[in-house]
Length: 323
Image: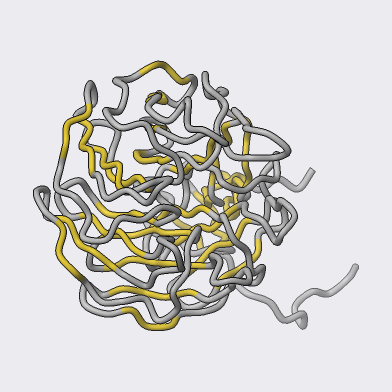
């Protein structure tokens, strides 16, 4: 008989009910169910194919969440699709109200029922339009007309930054639901970057200065400061999430990439797998959390209608078996 008394190890906790707030890797024996259990990874970070856009397009605006997304504007070389709006229900896209001003290379922010479309071109535009879930109405104009800019926040507390108007811009503007006012400038003037977060806690990553950049900047409602660099510098990248839980995906390096990275407020981590369709110039649901993002449209040798849904890694209580 083998003696085990000298082997070093850890005792397994015996409990009558599962812990309410376990930590990853924790193991216990539930004496009520007579089961050995643990808290471990149940799903991994991954993109899955969603329902296609009705109208394939690039350089479009986006807003909303994974189950209530909004896509509008876009298309090249002439924005013949630039007033088209579509709404996503988590499965398929359907038509929404057309924009008043047809445009491409614009920015979007907000939600499906309270969205904001800002800027666009060409030529550089200053128009703002507000969406109520049915139709678009005019809002206050940007102080600086531009395209290839980024937007984040909400319809009544929005943020627009960067972009292009003859040259790359560092300009930041804040929206209160009626008018735009100047905010603190980006440290690096650039366009076509990823954006996420809120008016007082925003995130900017990548973009084109040129060349393609990997810098990250964080906004506190007054000024931008440097954050951790992207692992893959790129232009035409899209983002979602928050300043401390951000997501950046796709873009061009200059080749199209599906690279996906996660931000924890300090550093970016590359995900082992990226988008199923590598692309730049896509749209994204800016209000989506890091764990449930939505990317749609874009350009890969032509306008794309593909939609992809991101599911972040999640932990769960699992029964441990020995057979």
